[in-house]
Length: 239
Image 1 (tube, rainbow, N blue to C red):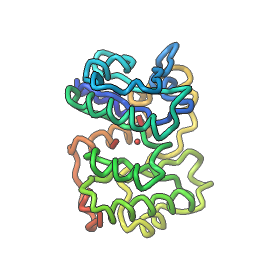
Image 2 (cartoon, rainbow, N blue to C red):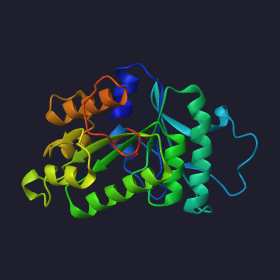
Image 3 (cartoon, rainbow, N blue to C red):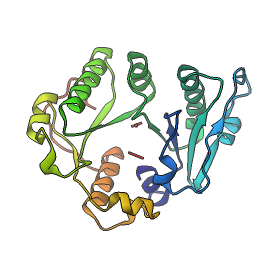
Image 4 (cartoon, rainbow, N blue to C red):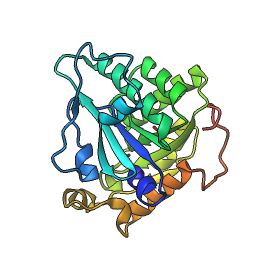
């Protein structure tokens, strides 16, 4: 949704980088028909992997938005990460935004080192559960240890009705030592809208409003006063 807002409403060239190498639902969220990941093969990494080649590995969503999503029957996940990072670096040379969906990829210190070195903004999406908050604390602690200059935006996402949450917003903020920037409340019609091919950012809903607010924060259009954060104040992983 952020990529759609930036490309459609902000006239900015964007590439969404899909770090999920074993299946993905990114085509459903973006409404891409007959979507297939680009295949890469072992030994395909050459000096000719320039901007043009990287662009050929993407799939157009609209005139200003593309998706980079790859798979391989020969390469393992670590090798695919190396490929996609090279492609992303090339694509960044002539695009306004590279939006990296790291929701299923940031699980090691090496991944976080990549994020700290290559990303300007890190959007951390947290669910109101003990496991999710614990993982968020781990990520923040590791980025702090690295000394990352990232600007981090914290989003609390309710995938189920708020009443079913086992931890409150106040408790989450206390654990993290930081205020939540955006709260995306449960939207019972969101899944149905997406399956029907609608884009949330175009709808008149609280979820749509919050996605627009999140995009504003990414663009630096909104500011807030918060207590100092240990990662030197703060996107790349919700498309």
